[in-house]
Length: 541
Ligand code: AMP
Image (cartoon, rainbow, N blue to C red; front, side, top):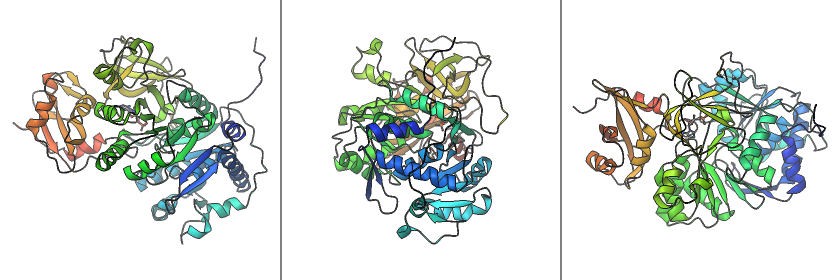
């Protein structure tokens, strides 16, 4: 027997409708890419403009299932595009501008995007490769007539001019909730980029799960600044979960440096923000140098790569801001787990609490975990045994876009490629990417643990650990460090600092200082590139 409740499909435009009706005057503040000034709109205006986008796209001949690319920073325009594109059943393909031009050409062609909306910043890059983008019939530059550059881009038009040709007298299209809404290619840390195709249903469920108190914990009284880009896996849900709850949004545009972010945090009264650790490194360095404060910020969500313990301690002890360590992946929409405190750990304080916060945490409802060995046998959740972390849920990929590869095991779980432990309370801790773990004498050393420890040294700005070939042990750890300005910690100092905090055989065999560590397009340490840089390196002795 079926239930007798209403058929109300989970469609994304219902979110912006709700925001406009219930939180219509709440602001979306954006830093303009043109000149860095702040632009203020309300959710009511964002919805009206999204409807105009939808109507204008419809007139352009874009419809159900068509792919539309955006190459853009976080802004009000990018937000209204998202709702406008998916509101007619078309698919927003968020292109990561930090990919190499060749990779961009590859994914845009693979997706067969028909239109591209791009920020001024990216006009020269796309001009240089537009011959390799035959599917794109037209380019819309996210600016007004006054700032529109001379450009050779096919059919180029300024967004504000393009939008003037439609009013908001439009009704969202009706379609099944499983209709595709967004396309995001993985950053290709391993292998080439692969497309993850989100649906309306998966994104709505993901946003609901994220907004809950033990996860993003959003409310109408929050002011949320997603520093994590809309092109990095749904901006970790915030472009949906913030309007869903009525939180004010602050969009930082192209300026993601410490001083610019600090100005927005303080000036707009931000209470919650989210980004990868490298972004926060820039903010913390700025605060240290200027003796700045964080007077309104309550929570910072840190994920995308492991959040070093030292970073958590600085935010919490020095600035009184609670850190929530989060883990996820493009294939998971992306949220997989969040490290909030369950009652079993309520009594923890001081160092013991920071030990807990180093973990990636527990999954929300809609994400199931499995831990297995290489043969697919389940492993115990004892907080010690590590194995392959597998996931299942309604916002987890079941296949890649236009790819035949089978990606689920016989129980429908997706192998994340991460090696992890899970404790009896359900807290997961990532030991490493399976490709990055260091195999020494048949045992495993976690590069993440060593990195976390090394950045706790007062002279270290950033640290990365890779395995290098060793004739006896197979691989041994090499610690690569970017020192803080004017500092140069020696190998002996570093090893002395680490001794006693880890098993003796985990101590790196050597320490090398470098000016910079390479990062991927989503701000993760690029281990493949780092291994390449040190391919001729020989360990001492
Ligand atoms: P991406 O899909 O590009 O966001 O990459 C997902 C991968 O990033 C995961 O499989 C992890 O290896 C890594 N990752 C994400 N968040 C964390 C975290 N908090 N700690 C450690 N690794 C993380």
